Image 1 (spheres, rainbow, N blue to C red):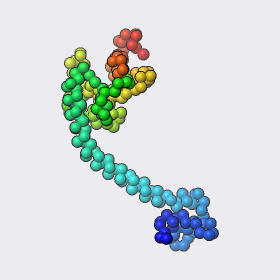
Image 2: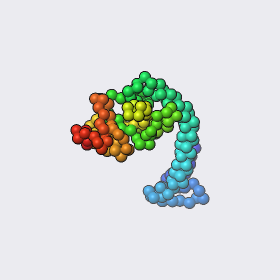
Image 3: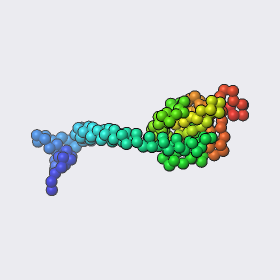
Image 4: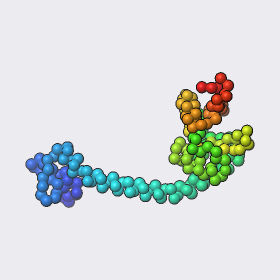
Length: 190
C-alpha cells in the first residue's frame, strides 16, 4: 500500500509515537504535537483556499457586471409598468406579499437608469430586494436597495429606518406607509 503525506505525519508505529517522515525524528502522539505537525499543512490549505476564493470572486464580478446590468434593465422596465411603486425580490423577480420594507441610506437619491445599477449592486450584496417609489412632492421616481423585516418586528424596522434617514417604512401586506418624519401624526409616530 502506497503511503501518503498524511501517513507520514500521523502514522503510529508500535512504539506509540507518530513518525514525521523527515530525518528519522520521532514525535510524541500528543494532541499538541498533532496540532503542531498539522499547522504548516493548515497554512498551505488556507492559502490555497483563499487564492481560489479570490479567483472565484474576480471571475464572478466579471460575469456579475453583466447580470447586474441585465437585472437593472429588467427592474427599469418593471418600474415603467408599476408607476405607483414596488418592492422586488431580485432572486425571483417577484413582489413579496409580506414584510416591512425599509430602504438603506447608501442608495438614497437614486432616480436615474445609471443610479439603478448602483442600487442593484448594493441589493445583491445585502438583502436582495429593490424598491421603487414615486415622490409626489418632487415628481421623481426613486430606486432604493431595501431590507425586509418580518411584520411582527415593526419596532426594529422603524429603528432601522430612522438610523438610515428614511422618511417612511412600508408594510407590504396591508399597503400601509408609516411616516418617520418628526411631524408625523401621533397615531403613526413610534
